[in-house]
Image (tube, rainbow, N blue to C red; front, side):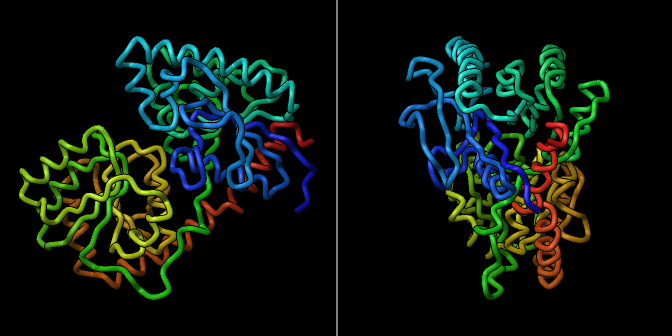
Length: 388
């Protein structure tokens, strides 16, 4: 379908700093997807040490605004904004400066580039910078911002951003429901981010090892790796676990593995670029996602593209990604025994696991491919502009 050209300004605090960077990679993926639908995208993001003021990453132009003394510009890209803001006066001042100077940067970009639409990613902080510039705004919520909006003090700010928005979206049905509740019933639609279908593909021959499991995620309490280590200890089968990720609980989790007597069955791989994940997904029997209140669980989509099924807690947006008994297994949140039993079942029934993995790839291609998501958001842009 041929569309009239359209300029859309993306405003975000998370975006890849260079090719292959995982920070905000899904926002870059969306920018590329909508560019395939006749949309010209320019991204506005905060600065950080070592980053140029202007760059082009995988065909998408990005401009970065200064918001604080260089040593203070550490809020973005590392996933530690909440910890920095809650833990120090400097973090709070840096956030205030980001909101103020970010708003000025949006105003300058609107005047200079004249986009027809502004697309804010996360209502906080980006959505608070984007309203009132004389250009329609839509907001996509990714998870942490919806959880913030559930608090009494933040809800007023959330509703103010929503009142300035032409449309509100969330990347999973669970997040959309929570956002609707916080907004008193306002329409919030579900629209996921695209997955990297060109990167995550099955290997030519079956490489899945029936006794090798995989965890990919930040090493913090919300991601649930402690539960998974307990499941390793409780399992009937001696499967092994590869752990990809870094985070504040990394040292404690390694000690936990030692205490449980399973250190020899766990391999700690640290943080890895996306380009290294395909082989790990493709050789694993299953991806284990013991997260609670996950916004979506994009790693589950990436694994499915490699024909690897997932075992996940039936929590948050994971229920959008994993179809129990069809593309993977959902177990009750926090039930370590059920988690261990489900993983043992993968080892015992590898043919069934491979069939689930194949079904998972078919399903996610229909929902999370760049073509499907790009068309979804192009239609949303046109609707926000009144069908122009």
